[in-house]
Length: 471
Image (cartoon, rainbow, N blue to C red; front, side, top):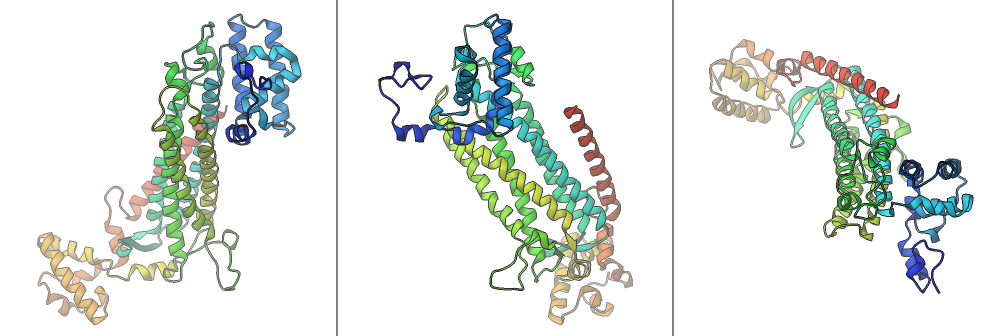
């Protein structure tokens, strides 16, 4: 007996095994493409109308039925059925139940292969726009916080050892730069998402005179895909999204790691609002930065999603293979994870309260102005490598005596180099060290103010661009 409930059941004599049906269905997760599928169906109706395949009355009836289904989906009244396999067949069957056999004409000149590729691109284009907006909000929070804490000094680290003092604002703007690069990558990816597969059909194109430029334009794409084989089997756009997301999550994880460290008693640099922390079920004193820890943890999940789809794609011959059903869950999960992480990271930055005195005290620990002492000797005429060696001996002496560099008496310093004079002490202050880093991109206050001004202007320009796109 033929599996007459399936649109492809004509050549089959047996019904699909229940386990096969359960194993192969995708509607349990691809239903989130439903509204994108409606958009794509409406554009295809217009292409069929323009090609003379549908009469005006047929096109109007199909469009009206699709709009009714769209309303049901938006209102949560639409019932998805697993036996119909995927979101596309669910919508087609619902349309058939509304308007009758005419619904069967909708699939003329089209395959689920180009249909899903189009829906997926529409979905990722929308997700990318939302992520760009969230990245802008996070970067705005970093700039706002950098202005709020301007002037506060903390130790900069290399190898997690005290290195040189920097402005906290400078440190925060380093993350602004990271997330700006992330935004640039997502914007670039939008260009490659702007290719429309619709009209490629199963793999070889279609004999119907469909205007692919028309459907691309109706759906807001830049152009139709140029090769039908590539159009239905390409998932580079999904991999690029996953890579961009993985890189952004890595940056979020680095920010989270620093917040976790800075909140510990050993650092004591910052505090977070209670609303962004949790407690312990046994230790009443605990205030745990669980949001930051979970962002750090979920980064591995996003990496895994990238590896999963790379692995799916690596052995696929042209054109479509059912393996490609495995492309959506990693992307859906990544999009959800990244958006939540960006929102929460923005809240953490906004709520971050620095402990200025502790930061300032820590900036004096670890001989962070030792490089300044070497620079001082260089300006007195000593080659840098020799100055480095001299200062290394001075640091060892300071460690032995339990002194900070500026606490060493002048006569003791002069034992290490006769070039050292009374003016040396102005080179050993934390504020002096910060102020001297005046090169472009440095931590000197005037350079940081300039960086803040550039960041603010860039964010305003992005806001204008987003507003233009919405209108």
